[in-house]
Length: 136
Image 1 (cartoon, helix red, strand yellow):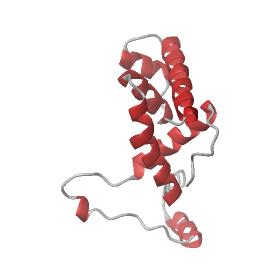
Image 2: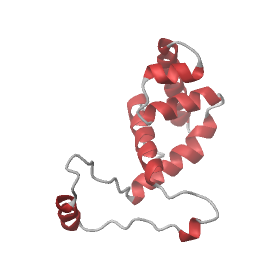
Image 3: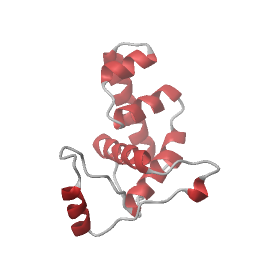
């Protein structure tokens, strides 16, 4: 994946953050038992459809299976983008928002008003976009 030619926008950065958050949820846990963890193997879509029909829970959302490109996006976001941000609060605001957390909950965790959280989120996104477009 060649990301050097991409012109970053806040919407595109937010989309990558959301993909990284989704991938983070389904990755196996890291620890001493990592060698024993089984990675889910993506099967063909027809078998997945039959498995969904066999399940008793009809409202259950289908499991998310990240592609190699999405896992690469997760690595880029976590290992390259977040070290570019100096403030730990900005990192948390970006990550929590990408995970789908509401503004009121983010604000209560960081002890400020939700409008301040929204403003800090926008500023952090713009700072990240500026640094990515500068090639840092």
